[in-house]
Length: 416
Image (tube, rainbow, N blue to C red):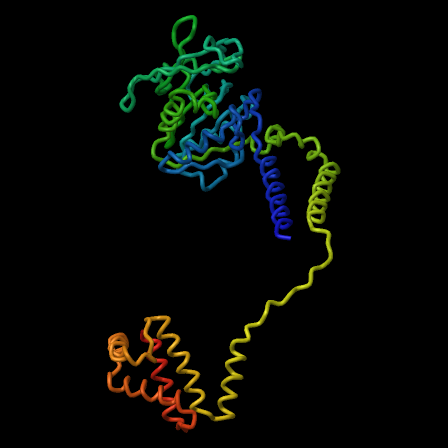
C-alpha cells in the first residue's frame, strides 16, 4: 500500500508540473506592431521602459490609462510632468490644443513625443514642425545598414554625446525643422544626422507660462528594444531629465486596444482547444478522468488484511501477581531470599563480586563500600543478616526489617 501511495503522489506532482509548464511556456515576440503600450512586453511595447522609469525617477513615475482630456481634468496631475508618447493632437481639434496650452500655462510640464507632429500646434507654440521623412529601407533582419546617429548638443548639464541606433521602420517621420526663430524661445537639445549631409533637430524644449514643454519626434526611443540597445537607457534618462524635479505621469491610451489581447494570448500547443469554450471544458474533463483512473487503478486489488494486534506486555501483570502472592502469605523471609538471590546475581554481573564467598568477603566489602559510600558496619551487618535468613527457613522477619534490607539492596544496586 505504501508503494501505491507513492505512485499516486508522483502522478499528482507530474500533473502539476505539466500544468505549470503550459502556463509558463514562453510567448513569441511580435515585431510588427508599434504599440508603445505599458502592458506590452514585445520589442515595440513600453513595459520595460515604464518599469525602468518607475524604479529610477526619484520624484516618482506613474502610468495611467487615458487621453489628454483625462490629464487635463485629473487633479492629481497638477504640478507634475505629463508624458505623452505617440499621442496625436490633430490640427482640427482646437479644443484639445487649447487644453494642451492651458496645462502648460497653469504650471504643468509636458513631454510630447510623436512621429507625426501637428502643424497647428507648432504654429501656436512658435515653431515650424514639418512632417518631412528621412527614408530608410525596412530593417527587420537587423542589418547595420539602416542605422542613424543622434547627437546630444552640449549644455550646462551634459557634454556632447553621440548615439547610434538601428531604425526598424521604413520612414523616420516627423522632423522638427525650425527651432531657430528668435521669437520662438526654443532650446534644441538633440539632432539627427542625415545621410545626405547636415543635421535636423528632433528634440527641443521651451518655457510656456509656468510650465515647460519638451517635444521630440523620436518615438522609437520609448520602446523595450531601444532601451536594451547600447546607451539606450542613458538617452532615455537624459530625455526624462528635461522634466526637472517633478513627478511624471504617463497617460497611455492603448491599454484597452484589441491587438494587445491577441498578442498576449498563450502560444502553447493547447491554445486551439483553450480558445474555444466547449473544447476547453472537454480538455478539463479528459484530464480529470485520466487523473481519477490513475488513482483508482493504482490501488492494490486484494482482500482486506485484518489488523493484528501486537502482543501486550505482561510484565506489569506478573509483578502484580507476585506482589499479591507475597502479601497474602506474608512470608517476609521468602521474599527476602528471592530478593537476595537477585541481589547476588546483579553483584556478580556488574562488579564480579561474589557476596557468598567468605574467603574474599573483606575485600568484596571494601569494594562495595568504595563504590556506594555506605557505612562499612551497616553493610557488613546487613550482608550477614541476609546470609542468615537465606540459610535458616524457620526465621520470622518483621515488616520493618524486611523493608530496611530490601531498600539497602536496592540502594547498593543503583549506586554501583
